[in-house]
Length: 417
Image (cartoon, rainbow, N blue to C red; front, side):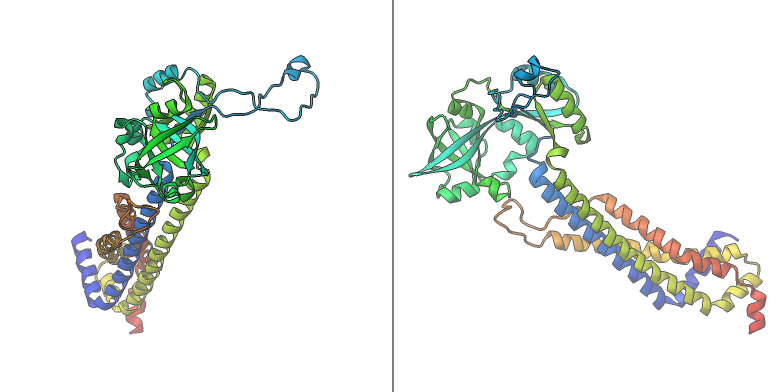
């Protein structure tokens, strides 16, 4: 039997029971719309939360950790003995990365590396009257930090480029500034653990969204921080590396650790718990959306079952006039897919509209000053997943009723009448 005729018959059956058809399509529409809206919002929220950490976290961090020497002198003298050594102190090795210029040169030639940003970390005390507040000043290359780690997005007040252009300048953590009652343009005094004191001008505030971090963290240029510590311009304590492929970070970190004889930490190890939380939220979003579509599929199954019982005579006449069981099966599958296609595309449109509504809802919080509305992800793949799952659900919902209709014996139906 030619396909156009099957489509015409399916259309006639759909229009003959248009109310039931509309109910089934609305079920699919609602499921798809909620799937798109929920998944877009949840993944947008995940991207926001991931960005708070991952945008500021290097894929690989090279540093020198202060720790005791693994092999003590007594182990070298008596290697075959079991030696007990207590109160082992750190080896006094500097936090400076040795041969950092050669390391930087090597990394710039590595095709796996997108970019790198050297950093100097300085433990300091903010002097506020007679009170000393513990803090950390991160000496950074402003341009590299902006290019690789979106530094400018976390400076809600002040000009981040003033770190490079103005000597002895400081971008202070917002929570620390609130504690010290400091505003942009004010002067603060900082003291290093060695007792060296210096005055710095506040040119902006840094706000990561993590208040505990913003209470202690501030930023200055590499030159200002090296000067504060009394070091030359070759003094570097950390090298932040960003890769083209973040999944290679664990393997490359181990490679760099052996090659450069430094400690190396990859982003997966540093943020394992955070990544797990993001994955769990995504799984929950998919599970809820798919559940909605399955519920809609049961509605289509019930409606097609009722349609078969009500159209027994029509099915019998079709088979008596030469339609095969396969043709009847195709008719009811066509009905199911038509409901899925219409309801699915309408659900995509409504889901996109609802996502825009959510995206326009104001979301103002002091912890995230750069975020003005609720985050929504409009990734095309979610819309493709939605329509594909809509068609798959309606096909499976219509398959059993279609098979039942294809096996109806017209003689039994006519004889029963």
